[in-house]
Length: 176
Image (cartoon, rainbow, N blue to C red; front, top):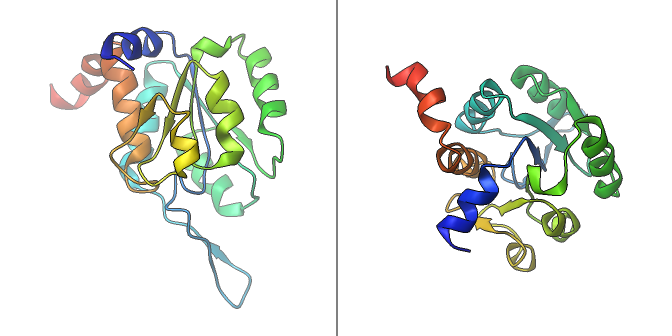
């Protein structure tokens, strides 16, 4: 996909949907003997999400697993659309389109495995982390140079903000 095509797609984005395991995290699920689950989230991914929200772009999570730690991280980031234990992500996707009065072309999605291909094929701007499943990467308009849980989300968000000419607005708050 050319930069011109990516730019046209990025300018339409009103909603970013993220998978969790393998996208917001490195995909590892760490369990202890007490039944606790641990996940590592990259702080710059979180800051990227906050920057996107500051320019009015909504963020949602749709993930197949259920985890209390995902709810906690979403709350820290101000993400209110958290859909866990979702076998058919397209059902939640449809409800989000209706709720936010979006069309496919105004949605961006980042996924990493074959369960995400359905959404990757539908959305206006699709992305996958560098370490995503090879079949999944075939359906992504943008493949991050970063791995899941290691800055892939931030890289995708920066792409959206820069191509949409919103980067200076949000980064200017920090750069001066």
